[in-house]
Length: 208
Image 1 (spheres, rainbow, N blue to C red):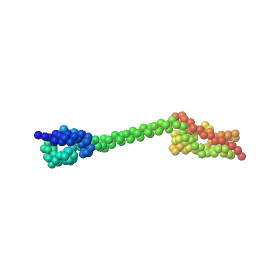
Image 2 (cartoon, helix red, strand yellow):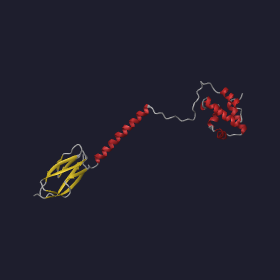
Image 3 (tube, one colour):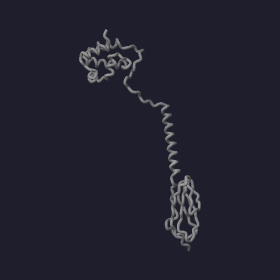
Image 4 (cartoon, helix red, strand yellow):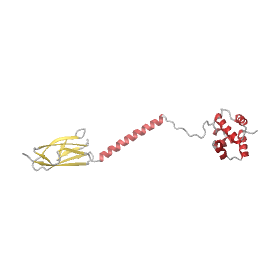
């Protein structure tokens, strides 16, 4: 008794069709055709899909579709046999709670590492420093000179070696005493790592 596999293979051989040629004619993958000829049901799709394949193959080989399908129905295994319903299909990507957790942990780690890296770079960098007052070449007519500016929030500021208080926003403001002969105001900002940024202003002291 001829099986569906031998029935199709014999017809293909009579037609002198290679597996590749039959694949090109029917647009059915060669692996499926081989599986059908060997009746390797595990590699084949379920019955409704397989029926369509067999009809196309029968038509390409000049076989009677009704007879070919009848043989397929006779040989097709019972449903209790484990058959792959979707052969040759790669696993689909599924977003799972575990993956959500791992992604969340990854994002947190990247954020923490980035924060630490930025903090470390800032720690090693010289502090920023802007001096608003006095202006360059400013004429000073009083002994008390106002000095204002802005720096990095954790920097220590001195003006002509006199310490100034720095606010939470990095702003400093205060007065220093100048004398006749004072020609320059030197503002220094020192970071926690010991890096120093210096700004100087030339002034002209002209007491009345």
